[in-house]
Figure 1 (spheres, rainbow, N blue to C red):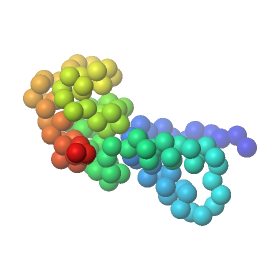
Figure 2 (cartoon, rainbow, N blue to C red):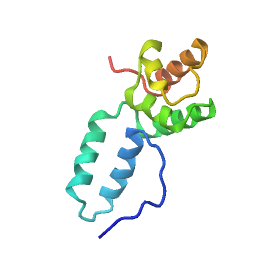
Figure 3 (cartoon, rainbow, N blue to C red):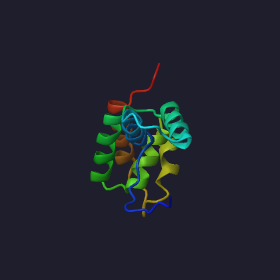
Figure 4 (tube, rainbow, N blue to C red):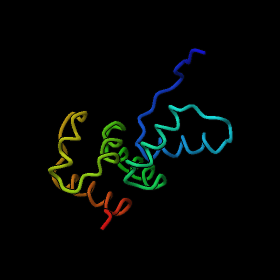
Length: 114
């Protein structure tokens, strides 16, 4: 059965995990591909799903593109030097103060494991 793409939205790995979890919980038999992608998302999620959605909204409100916000959430940089390479889709690199606010936002919603 062919599929048709109806919509395209950049999502972070935790958001994908949430969508796949909902699909799996329906109780219908899911494809092996869905199961493998779900396991991948579970393993690589650095943030809780709800926190990832909040961060995505806040980063977009700060002026970042959704694809940049998704990469920031997926990689979960710890320092500004790790954050800068993730800004390749932005037309200009924000000032250091803005980048530090991004890291503070990540620390608030996705604290690093100790």
